Image 1 (spheres, protein in one colour):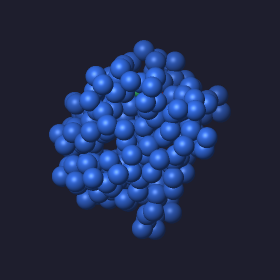
Image 2 (tube, protein in one colour):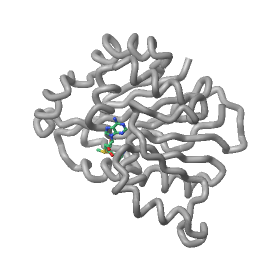
Image 3 (cartoon, helix red, strand yellow):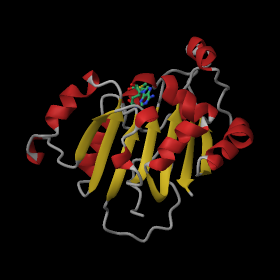
Image 4 (cartoon, helix red, strand yellow):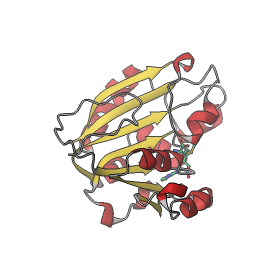
Length: 213
Ligand SMILES: C[S@@+](CC[C@H](N)C(=O)[O-])C[C@H]1O[C@@H](n2cnc3c(N)ncnc32)[C@H](O)[C@@H]1O
């Protein structure tokens, strides 16, 4: 497995001795692709793949990546239009890291309630011992309608331990780290939604890191 990048909410533990800085990083629900683009510019030896079913927010960055690197290009980036429900089989086993940042809709429901079939899709694209990072930032008041619609339970550490650990395990993903970060300690985090949601006192971050087993 390649060494994880430094673009994690918390540094994941790794046994990797790979110092080449290579690897494949997949961002599911990539939105406007900011995390993928910025990370790819910082780590030119790694391949970044951003995936989202909604293509229009990716139009601008999709043009930008084809420029010369000195003019903002990123030849190590690929964007794919797809949902977590139908990830292309060509991605099977290729990812050293999978990221899911501030998901909504069925992607949020899958990772926050532990839908084993869709977690299995995330596991399917993982190389052995790949790391999956899930970052969720819900506000119990502002997001009440969506929380009710999706049938979500607040993502406390207890809920993760009692309800999610065994579901992730059943999908072949071992949760190795989890936590809640209060709104006052919102970390530096390179996605557009992180920046948009930051500053709202009711919005803590729940995160978990799992290893493909
Ligand atoms: C709040 S945005 C976050 C975008 C980006 N990750 C960020 O942090 O800026 C949620 C994203 O999840 C995507 N999404 C929703 N359902 C999805 C699904 N079933 N599969 C993959 N992506 C999905 C949406 O299209 C949207 O771009």
